[in-house]
Structures are given as C-alpha cells and as structure tokens.
Image 1 (cartoon, rainbow, N blue to C red):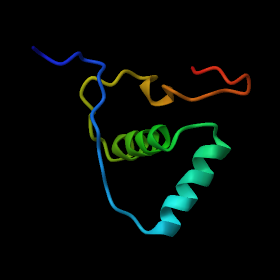
Image 2 (cartoon, rainbow, N blue to C red):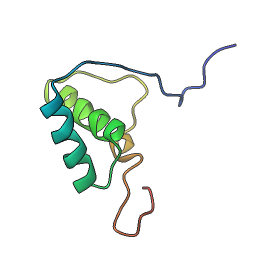
Image 3 (cartoon, helix red, strand yellow):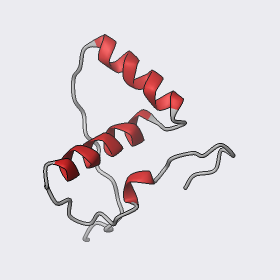
Length: 73
C-alpha cells in the first residue's frame, strides 16, 4: 500500500544539550513544537541554497504554527 503524500516520517539526530535547550526556548517563543521549528529551519535553509523539496507547497513551512489565538495555521 503506497504512503499518503502528506504523511510525515520520523527523523532522529543527536545534538549537544545546550543546542536542544535553545531549540526548546526558540520553539516556545514562536508557539511551535520543536519538530515544527526544525522543519521550518530546514525548509528555509534548503530554499536559501536553491534546493527543491519534493511535495512542498509554498505555504507548507507554516504548518502547525500556533498564532496568538492558539489556533494552527
């Protein structure tokens, strides 16, 4: 059975404890999950290097962001 196009995959990486703590703070400041922040940062980096991301629409980097009202958008 083929995967749905919008399914996510689990990605694991190691980092220094201070980097993780900083990411937790940054994610909290933007009302994002750490996963969503890492995805947004990766998308921004790839775009800045001219790397295409298959299956990504123009506004997909804001998926999961919670605005001031707490709603995702």
